[in-house]
Image 1: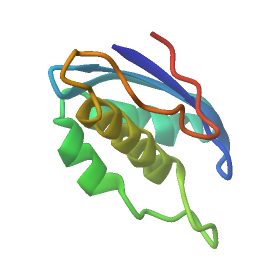
Image 2: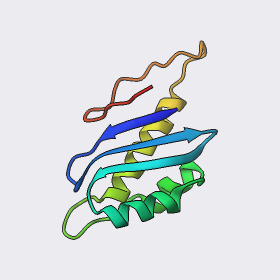
Image 3: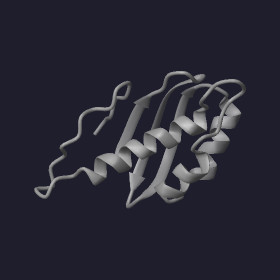
Length: 104
């Protein structure tokens, strides 16, 4: 499933990625530091979602409390939370996270 999240507090304005069987694929950032974000996207390609969250969580950019890699980990964590909140009927019972847009 492809997800799109709007980002705040970092140079990138948006991140899109696909998650297939718990594996992160096709990460794309809008705006931000082009070379660095392309590098991050390639490095996380094919990694398990939990491994990406662990590696990128808490990274700061300068004096900022967050960074583009950290924001990617936050978005991935939201995806994990949503999948954990699936009801027994297979329906989602998750409020939309503030500041995010998810595409199906």
